[in-house]
Length: 373
Image 1 (cartoon, rainbow, N blue to C red):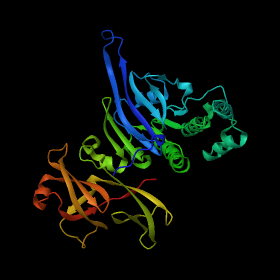
Image 2 (cartoon, rainbow, N blue to C red; image 1 turned 45 degrees about the horizontal axis):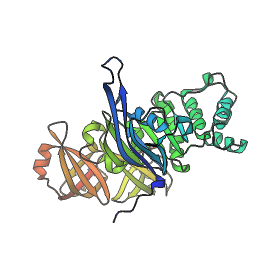
Image 3 (tube, rainbow, N blue to C red; image 1 turned 60 degrees about the horizontal axis):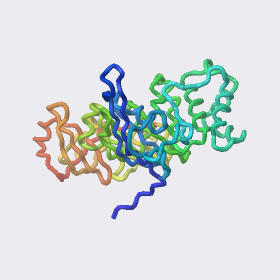
Image 4 (cartoon, rainbow, N blue to C red; image 1 turned 90 degrees about the vertical axis):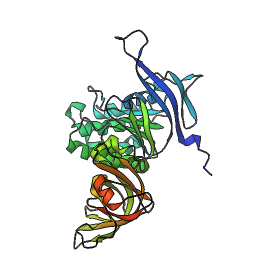
């Protein structure tokens, strides 16, 4: 029996947003966003899709910056929009982090933070402001003006400012898109900490799959104003209809725990609910949780355990389903490895030679495994 949902821990989003183009005939809809989702008001919900699919429009509607044409929006049981009316943007307890850090250039970092703290429901004391500056390691930046900061430092200040309003919901609109790879690597550990240490639901818009696989607990995939798939990130990424949208980046995310270090060969063992994997030692501590990404193109199949092989990671699996790939010569195979799901992309010829069928038992061979950190 399914549990009755806890409406105080849900974002109930059932609404339409219509945008009109003034160059077209009067009132003609240029774009329509249709959302009919219940999102968990916890962890990170990533909203993923190509440019122009409606990701930012969704965030703006949640924040009250984009009018909702019809429908209902409730957060933690409180109506933010329904037939009775709509909370204005300043009445909604949200923090918003934009792609470009929108800081007041004439104020110091300290001044930007003080301005944000005045928007909190209750005035924050110096200790609470210090707690957030220490959390984001920006204490040394307080006297500086935004023009003196790097892109990564500006975004850390923008995140601090969003947190200082004491939001019930944090909205992040492609916060890493304007940063180079070095600055992205600087910011990502702080986003990891936001997720793990703060009890704050985050809706995170991105078109970068590496950010989804590293940060997301739940995932919405959008296209042309509609949600094409939604649910826990590990389930959505291994659906057979989703990988065709992701191309060469299609694959699975697996959660595990570091259980052993092989110092002789510089390897770590990670146990998960389908067995264990060996991967390159990158310094994780024994007992540490590890999120692993396994690309479909790095998974091959065998009818037997090929022990005389250079591939270390070989696991028994069951074929759950098969679907055509966008490449007509290839197939996508969905596989159960214990309670975990993996994807493999193999040629149709290989599938024919292996005589693959539903519920078939075989072995997966994983050529490359990466810890997401």
